[in-house]
Image (cartoon, rainbow, N blue to C red; front, side, top):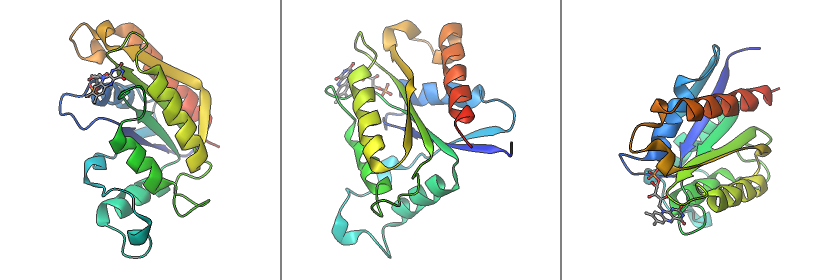
Length: 180
Ligand SMILES: Cc1cc2nc3c(=O)[nH]c(=O)nc-3n(C[C@H](O)[C@H](O)[C@H](O)COP(=O)(O)O)c2cc1C
């Protein structure tokens, strides 16, 4: 198979984000021929507005859509905010869902994982992220699930936890296997 590019979106803007660290683990554990590219500009996207979508849309939106266009698959790594999708991520989903029926991730495999402080590791937020992306156009891989309660990390970087590293590696492998 030719080299596989995976777009990575992180649903937290926090500098010390555990989800960003989990995304780093995914990038570190990618098999040969697979590259994970974090789109690090979700905080620069304006709020979705149909009036300004289309030709001449804001540059960060163009950059997001181009990164999605160039990717073969996407990995979303996100916390849960108030039982749901962090706003910054939902906004990115809305931009990626347009043009309607022809968004840049249309039909591409997408997996959702992440960590949150709660005892279920953000599973509500992850389920809702899968639901929303499923409507927006990508092909959500429903059986790839990983919601890690943050206490598992014991204040350390997730790469220090061998079980988590193995689980993240399996997620990336399953996602790559979905790329045709
Ligand atoms: C606005 C807000 C809402 C949150 N809501 C939840 C929640 O519903 N469930 C949960 O498990 N954690 C919740 N948390 C805690 C996050 O899981 C925790 O801050 C996590 O570390 C955020 O991810 P990050 O480290 O990638 O920034 C919330 C945090 C914030 C800031």
